[in-house]
Image (cartoon, rainbow, N blue to C red; front, side, top):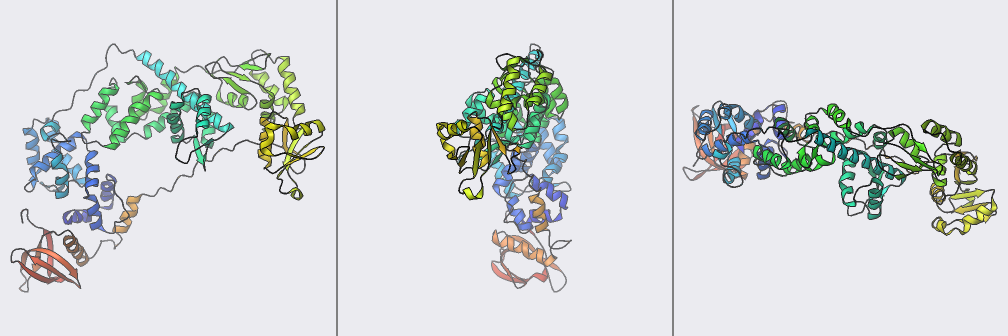
Length: 620
C-alpha cells in the first residue's frame, strides 16, 4: 500500500482521475492518498479492473504476475516470456506499451525497465490463472481469424425482416404513448405496472402481455414516458417523438440502445465480421475479454437480445444496420432501414358508417389530429378509425369546432365527406355545451363542482344515472347538480358516459381541458463527478500535497495499521545514514515507536531523523 500511495502522490491530477475512473469503489470513506491506495488495492476493486482487461493486456499482466512471484522483473523478461509461450510478434513487441497501460490502471508499477506487481494484485490474479482465467500460454494464443460473410446469407431478406420487426416495435411504442395520453398507468408498490394497465397497454399496442415490460422499459430509457408519483405518463419528449416520422422514431430508440452498450463492446464488434451469429458473437466477445464479469454479461444481453426488437438482428444474425449503429452512423442506419418501412400516406377514405380507413400508416401529425376526435379501431398497415359522440365531444372539449373538424376531414379525404358524417359532426357540435361543469360556489361547500343545463330532463337523467354514482351527483334544483369532486373529475366522468359536456369558467366561457398533462422531462441531475470531488478532498492540503514530515507520518501510520515491515533510513549524528528493518507500532508527538526485526528490540526515533522509508525486501 505504501508503494501505491507514493505512486498516487506522484501522478498528475488528470492521470490519477483516469486511473480511478477505471475502478468501482465507494468514495465516502476516503480522506487521503493512503485511504485511496487502500480502496484501490481492495479485492473487489482489483477484480473489477481485471475483468475489463482485453486478452492482450491480461496476457501481459498474467506474465508479469508469474515473473514477479519472487521479486521484480523487466520489460524485456516479459517480452521473452510471451515469445516462449508462442505469442504473436504483434503481442510480444507491444509488451512495453501494454505494461504502460497496466501502469496507468494501477495494476503494475513500472520504473524505467523495472516491473513490479503489487502484492494485492498478485494475490488476486495468480490463483485464478488456469482456473477461471486462462493460463499465460492460453492467453498468448493468437486471435481467432475474422469470420467472413457466408455466401448463402440473403442480406436482402435480412434487411426486409429487420425492417418489419423494427417498424412493429416503433408502432407498438407509439400506441403505448397514445394509450398513456388517454389514461396513465399505475406503478405497483412492489414494482411493475398494475395488471389492468398492463393488459390495456398490451392490447393497445398489439403485443403479447409478456412482451410489454421490455417495450415499456425501452420507452422509459428513451425518455418517452416518465413516472410521476405512482403513475406513468407520456412525457413532453414522448409527445414530440410521436410526431416524428417512423425513421426518426426508430433512430431515437436505436441511439438509446447503442448508448447503453459498453464502449469496449461497441469497438470490438465494429472490428469483427458482420456475419457473426449470436452464438459465435458471444464466444468471440468472451475470447477477447476472458475475465469479463457482469458488465460483459449485461452488455451482451443488450447487444444481442435487445437488438432483435429494433431490427438490428434477425434470428441471431446481425442485420447490416447493426454495425452502422455501433459505429455511430445512426443517420445512415436509419435511412437504410426505413427504406424498407411501409410508405406513409396523407389521405384516408371516409365511410358512411362513420368509420375512417387509412390505406397505409398515416403521417404522424395527421394521425395525432385524427385521434383527437376519433377512436382507433384497427391497428395495422391499414388502420381504421371511428367517429362517435364521445370521441367528438373529446375533440370539441380540446378546442375543435364543427368547422375545424370538417375542414380537416375534407383535406384528408380521398372521397369527400359523406352526408351522415357531416350531419353527425354538426349535431354533436350543436349539443356540445348544453351541459356545463364549473367550479362550485364557496357557499356550496363541501361541494367542489357544479353541473348545470337548461334541459331539466337531462339534469334528472344525470341524477339517477347509476354509471355516475362514483362522482356523487346531488340535484339541488331543476337545472343544477353538485359534486364533492373537482370539476375536471366530474367533466371526464360525464364525457366518458357520452354526455355533451363542456367545462366553463366563472364567467360562463367554455374552457378547453386536456385529460392528462404531459409529464415534463426530468431535469438532468447535476453532473457531479465523484472522482473529481474525491480528488478535491485528497489533494486539498496545498499545491504540493502534504508536507514531507506529514507524508512520512502517514506512511508510518499506514504501515503500523497493516503490520508491514519497512526499511527505514535514519540520519546519524555523524551525517551518515543507516538502514533499519522496522515494524512500526505507533506514531505520536513527532516520534516513531517500532520493533527492530534484526536486533529484536524496540526503538523510538524522532521523525525529523528519518530520511526515507521503503517497503522491506521480499522475504524479510
